[in-house]
Image (cartoon, rainbow, N blue to C red; front, side, top):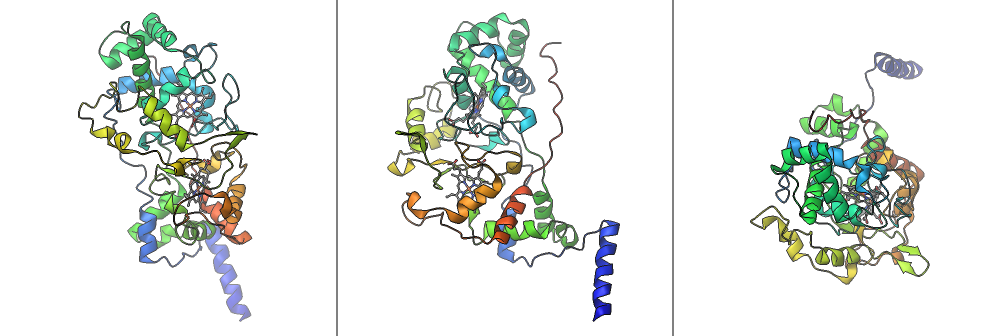
Length: 392
Ligand code: HEC
Ligand code: HEC
């Protein structure tokens, strides 16, 4: 018996010494493997947005990168998109609530993989990436830029005017509103290139699907157990579904929606009102898709009272590198997020029908496993080289 134990210890030491992992693999059922497969492939195939004429074009993307870092688009000349969406901070800012001209009510979301969404903002007030990019330019509490400022800058700055002509095939004209929309379309083309790197989870998924047990067993046991919970008993994938770990829709998980005493953030409900009122939605004249096919979602969406207090399901790639969490930054760490799902008060949820969220009452080990899984969705990001000049 003692000899057997010794042999086991030696085998384990040898495995560590050679770098080969002796970690076992959970017994994954076929159904589980299928479910895991739906969280890929990664990276996903590139998308083109038919509502945006410069989507996917190198000249549009380059112009967008310069505009993204351009503080002259703001009222005080000091704030750019990159002030809040920082490349070195996974396109967010690390704050609980964004700091614009004043402190805002919501957290700056990461922009990783944003080109694959169909609703934008925590409340879904935007139905295209470019429409969503107009909002901070005009919002008095954010960049407070104004339509005229954007037009004047594009016309008068030699490099931007030249970059604009390359991207749109015409010189910046006198229609300030059109220049505002085109600015947003270039910004969107740039942001759609933000695709997060492959992660340990992606290597595991591919190995599992390929039947490569050796490679799959390199994925830590705790992450495997956490993944099993995620797609199993905890049903996290009911909402955090697909390659980006979001179904792109909205949900209520019981995060308080009071902004300050007596004032609420109505979430999706208010977002749908704003969407209906926006001249920049896909139903408006700036949609570059003449068929109007891509406006189907916008045309059919209905405003329901259950939309009150719903917020967009965030994607979970790179989630461990971010935080604080939730639309209002009210949850500090991933451990606290898991605690929230473990202890959530069902009375706080106002969903119709079968509730998707219920208190999970996880053990400390289960909670740690779930966190280990979430952290396996993170990958290091190489520093970004500076943008090449617009018109050398
Ligand atoms: C003051 C900080 C701040 C600045 C500056 C800022 N943003 Fe944001 N951004 C936010 C916040 C906060 C939200 C969430 C908005 C909401 O849901 O109400 C957001 C949301 C977004 C989204 C939606 C992301 C998603 O997943 O739905 C996009 C896209 C975006 N911003 C792009 C931009 C662009 C482009 C600029 C520059 C023109 C910009 N932002 C400037 C703070 C900022
Ligand atoms: C009913 C749909 C739903 C289910 C089920 C669900 N989530 Fe969420 N999740 C959301 C929504 C919606 C938010 C954002 C809520 C907000 O900001 O108010 C969120 C936020 C999060 C966040 C914070 C991300 C960020 O960037 O702020 C994490 C992490 C997370 N969920 C993990 C999980 C895990 C783990 C499970 C399973 C235990 C789970 N979720 C189950 C809908 C869901």
